[in-house]
Amino acid sequence: VWPGMRGLEMEVYMGAEGSVGSLSNLGLLNDTITVENSADKSFRTTETAIWETPLNVTASRDTRRWCSKSKAFFVAPVTGDFRFYMSVEDYGTLHGSWIKNGTQAVARELLIDQSWQSPINDYWKYEAEQWSPLIFLEANQSILLDAAQCCNWQGGHLQVAVLIPSDVGTAQSLPEIQKLSIRGDSQARSQVISYLSG
Image (cartoon, rainbow, N blue to C red; front, top):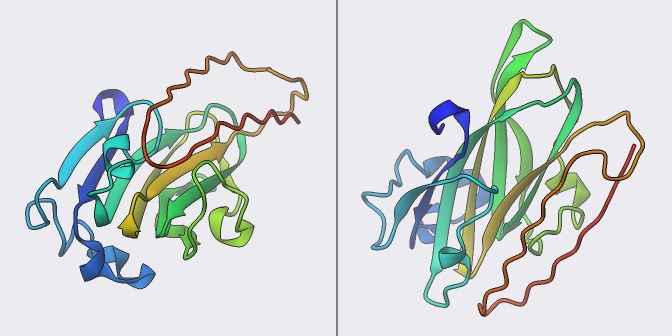
């Protein structure tokens, strides 16, 4: 999506939720509803750090009834079963396209269909709606993920995460750098850090 397949391409459609109206109509984004024919302040961006709606959208009291569509390649760092997670306000979907079993092309398979709002950084509130099935990927195999989401009031968010399999049952088995930023926005936030192993 970005040079070297790094980064996340995202389009934000201001005022579009009224035209979408429901989970089943998210396919209108980037097809019938575009950045060019959406309300003022609609935009395209490339994020390079995390899969999350930009703060200037989620923190603004003036941002209402907006939607977003985003896509990115995930390249498996190891061989194993991967699970993807999503957290949205108010509703959203995650699709995946990849080569299954080395030969079968899978195009835009629905992985997550979340119809209920979940808090920021909460991937566990509605397990049946927020978790993808396990997807087997070889090391260095890529999967194209695309997400669509709408917020029917103000604030809102979209987040996508992945659980990377590991057979090493030790804490902190991967190098880690955490950067926390605190901004004075109108939505209360908390930072929860969980360490899982095995």
